Length: 109
Length: 82
Figure 1 (tube, rainbow over the protein chains, first blue to last red):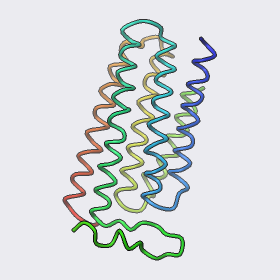
Figure 2: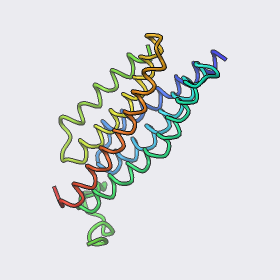
Figure 3: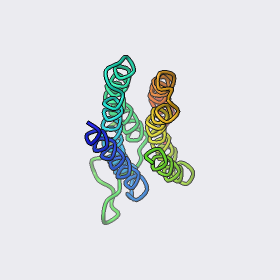
Figure 4: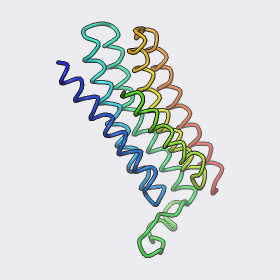
């Protein structure tokens, strides 16, 4: 049981580390959201599952599982709302040769 | 150990909040810091041996992080290009 807890929390920390590297190193707002939206959700889910296993059968463990379900619902929703707001206020996506993608120019007025 | 690693990652994310070009990069950095702080609060509860109190604080923090991100996104969506 202890080995499972250590494995889950280490994998959660690894996903947090990956999302932080993506937030710092990727060139664009959209690609940064791509890195953090998934890495943060999975890291929080794995860490909270490990902590709930560490706590055993109690009301506290149930509350930790409730927090993990809540994060699993709300974090992609927040990512989607933020991306849509950025797309509506015409933040330009990054391309390799510096041209602006045609799709993002005038799709939503 | 784990709490220390997450704290270092929070300080690395703070770079994107301070430097990041535009409002939306700062909002992403704030959202990521909020998610990491939620885990750090539960870990602090385990370290101090009072998990029952820190779980409720962490739950409220998750709600506040979600509401702040949604409302800021709506506000800057209505306000237009920045």
